[in-house]
Image (cartoon, rainbow, N blue to C red):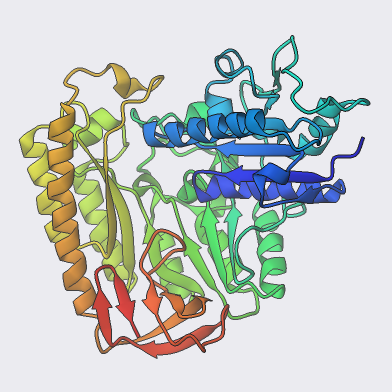
Amino acid sequence: MSVKKVGLISLGCAKNLIDSEIMVGHLRGAGMDMTPHAEEADVLIINTCSFIDAAKKESVDAILEAVNDRAAADNGRIRQKIIVAGCLSQRFRQELPGLLPEVDAFIGLDQITQVAPIIVKLFGPETAPTGTAPSATGPENLVTERPSFIPDYDTPRFRLTPRHTAYVKIAEGCNHPCSFCIIPKIRGKHRSRTQESVVREVRDLVAAGTREINLISQDTTYFGMDRWTEKRPNPRSPVDSSKGDSLASLLRELNAIEGDFWIRLLYTHPAHWSDELIQTIAECPKVARYVDMPLQHISDNMLDKMKRETDGAHIRDLVKRMRAGIPGLTLRTTFIVGFPGETEDDFNELIAFLEEAKFERAGIFQYSREEGTRAEKLAGQVHHMTRKKRWNAAMATLQRLSEEFHSGLVGRDLRVLVDKPGLARSEMDAPEIDSTVFVDKKLPVGEFVEIKVRDWRGYDLVA
């Protein structure tokens, strides 16, 4: 029996999206067709997220919906197989097969390149008729305990983003001890690709017409340092790229590639920024004057409890050095409110910092108590109503600051990348998460154009 159609639901962040693209690339290479209609699929893959409670719920809801839809279907075809992949499978690899016996297979990060033979094995030589019950032995559980996979430039991949924009995963895993985060336990230790591998991939993407390269990993600023023979004595010691590959050396190599494109930095960590990296961005015109750097808090009390490897003085000094060293920089960041032990003084210090730093792009999350993290067992858990109240107050501050920033852009000329007819993004805006610029619908999709800002509406601009 040959499986003809595979459906895929991809949840979560851009890092998960790349995993989905790799699965699709291998499925197509094996001669399997993709369908956007789950009900038509012989196999439905759900690539899950498990970062916080809301993501877990979305993933579980998607799995249950697929199971229920399959049970209700009677279309005379083979019984649809359901494969659950991604972070939920990886995080709860021991528990899920017992909790969701209706699923046919669970796969983790190490199995995304093996998805085609896994599907073939699931069906076997004989095809089960519609409505056949799950195997008596339960789901196939193929998830490895400690993932080690990292993509290379020639890893088969079918991009699910528009032709003009792409995500490039430069590393996988994370070495940081953040007490609120489960990612290191899910995705393993930090492991960088080689600089040559990333450069080759980006060169091919640019040659194919990509206008925006979004560099991603759990911590892009740690790129290359996991392979240095001489380790830094502590996270705050200076970065010296002469010891090996680093984000600074990678950016210079990418900037040298011929073509008209942006290079965008996402998911950087304040502990690994250096004057060299700041200077590199300033001297590389193809690197967008945009940095995504989640800070999480500014209070020393909170940063210590969060195990962020930085203190408030370090963050304030770094932001000042980045502003001074990279003219026109847009800083995107995120913060957590309601973390265990957060006092009114801690929260007020955060609000004052927002007023002081005036981040062009920022988001606020309410603390999510995640099982398996250090913070789960911390004393001083903040009441959910207090978390919500602080979130509302912080969001109101950010909204006012955003309105002030956007109103100040009226009359300015901007270079934008057209995403869809009538919709574009400036250098200040990453895909999916930042603002939109409304433009003339006749402007060519996938190309850079020069516009003048005429007005603003909420978080968006009007050209």
